[in-house]
Amino acid sequence: MKSAVIYYSRTGKTRYVAKEIEKMTDATDMEIKDLTNRSGISAYISYAMDIFDNKITYIEPKHVDITDYDKIYIGTPVWGSNVAPAIFEIINRTDFRCKDVVTYVTFKGAGEIKALDVLNNLVRQKGGNIIKSFAISSSDVNEFTFNTRRALKNLENY
Ligand SMILES: Cc1cc2nc3c(=O)[nH]c(=O)nc-3n(C[C@H](O)[C@H](O)[C@H](O)COP(=O)(O)O)c2cc1C
View 1 (tube, rainbow, N blue to C red):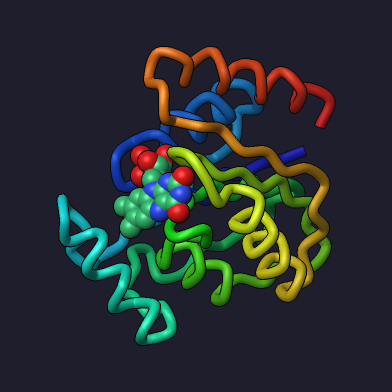
View 2 (view 1 turned 90 degrees about the vertical axis):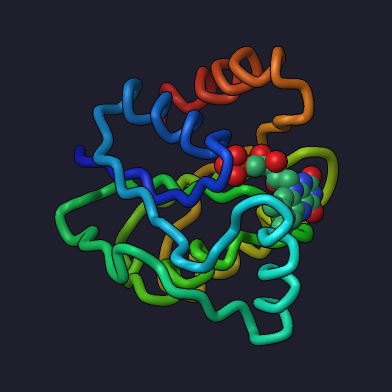
């Protein structure tokens, strides 16, 4: 069974989880870059503007080819109790029919349930079959690795 991890990460937390999944499952890395300036305070300003604009952003790569993959992991940081714009974009451009999908979010303190709900609904609208979801808090950096390993342990049978 071939797996791939599609994710966006601004400051590395969601990427860290993606890399752990890749190590565990031999999954292919499909990192999505957001071409909008999201550094520092710009992240919050540009995000507010994205909401106004219905979250349109430019991403790289523009598309991912998941034809040969059976299982897809999708990760995003929680932004305003929602998914990051780059993930919104890539899901909209991808056909997830016949794919089993595991979703995850990283977050600082709140909004993870709503963000996972949005994420799962987006994937379902594109035909994906959600088989598992999880959220990892990044609020305590020292706990992050521990919490990641604990969450991924439950993934071993997936
Ligand atoms: C624009 C923006 C909005 C955010 N909104 C939330 C939020 O609603 N709830 C939350 O817990 N964390 C929020 N965060 C924090 C990130 O979700 C958290 O730090 C995440 O783990 C970062 O992942 P990354 O390192 O992969 O970018 C926000 C961060 C940014 C930049």
